[in-house]
Amino acid sequence: MRKAIFDTDTASDDAIALMLALDYFEVLGVTIVAGNVKFENEVSNALFTLEYLNKPDIPVYLGAQRPLLGQWRTVEEVHGKNGFGDWEYPSPLKKPENEFAADAIIRLSKEYEGELEILAVSPLTNIALAYLKDSRIINRIRKIWIMGGAFTRGNTTEIAEFNFWVDPEAAQIVLNAGFDITIVPWEIAEESATITDEEWNKIEDINTKRSEFFLKVNRVLREYSKSVGSRGSVHPDSLTVTIAYDNSVAIEKVSKYVNVELCSRSRGAMLIDWYGLNKRRPNAEVVIKADSQKFKKYLFDSLSKA
Ligand SMILES: O=c1[nH]cnc2c1ncn2[C@@H]1O[C@H](CO)[C@@H](O)[C@H]1O
Image (cartoon, rainbow, N blue to C red):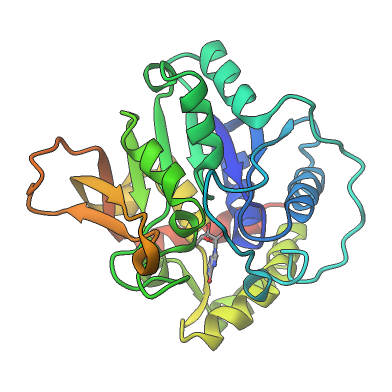
C-alpha cells in the first residue's frame, strides 16, 4: 500500500477525505494546521474521526497554529461552530503526539525515503516549515497532492480559494521548492465533487456508520454551499484524495509554472503562467477536468462499507 501523511485543518469534508485516505493509503500520520476552525476543534475532529473509523493507532501531530505571516480568519459559517456541523460527538479518548508536525513530516520522509506522499488538503504552513528546516526533503517526498487555488471563482475572496488565501506565503514556498506537485483547484471540485440534494437522499438511504458520519459532519457545509449558490455540498478534499489514489479521475491536466499572489486585494490568488511568459519550468500539474461519476462511485462505495 502507498504511504501517506494526511495534512489537515479538520472540518467537514476534511474528515471524509481522511476516511477515503484510510481506505486507499497506509496513513502514517495526520498533521494538523491552522485553517478552517479553532485549532483545538480541528485536533478534536481529527482524533474523533480516527476513533470513529476504528483507526485509533494512527498518530496525530500538532502543527502550525497560525499562518507564517498574515492574518487569517476561521470559517465557522462554512463548517459549523466546531467544524463538524455542530454535531456534539463524544470527546475522543485518543491523544495527540508530542512531536511537532513539521518534525514528524521530516522524520517520516527519512524513514520512507522516496515513498512518502503528502495529501495536503489544507493551508500549506506545516509543509513550508518542514521544507524551511530541511530543504533536502524535496528529494525524499515522492509527491504532494494539493487542494488549493482558484482559477477565477474564489470561495474566500473574489479571486482566492481558502487554503491558498490562509497562508499564501507558505503556498509560494512549497510551490517554488521543487516538489513533485499536483494541484486540484476549487472550481474543479465545484464542477465535479458537489453532492446534490438527490445524492444526499441516497446517502441517507445507505444507512451505515460511515454514511451517518457524512450526514452529520457536512450538515452546515451543505447549507452554506447552497446559500452561496453551489448545487449542493462541495467536497474538494475528498476529490483530491480520490485523484491521488486513482489518477484517471483527473481527466485533463496541464503542467505549468504556478505561483501565488501575496498582495492586498488579490492575496492568495493562484497565478498560472499558461503561456510560459516567465520562461520558468513547470512546477506543478494542475487538474482542469475531473470525472464526477467516477469520483462519486468511489465516495459512495466508501460510505457503503460497514
Ligand atoms: O466554502 C467552502 N467550501 C468548501 N470548503 C471550504 C470552504 N471554505 C473553506 N473550505 C476549506 O478550504 C478548502 C476549499 O477551499 C477545503 O480544504 C476546505 O477544508
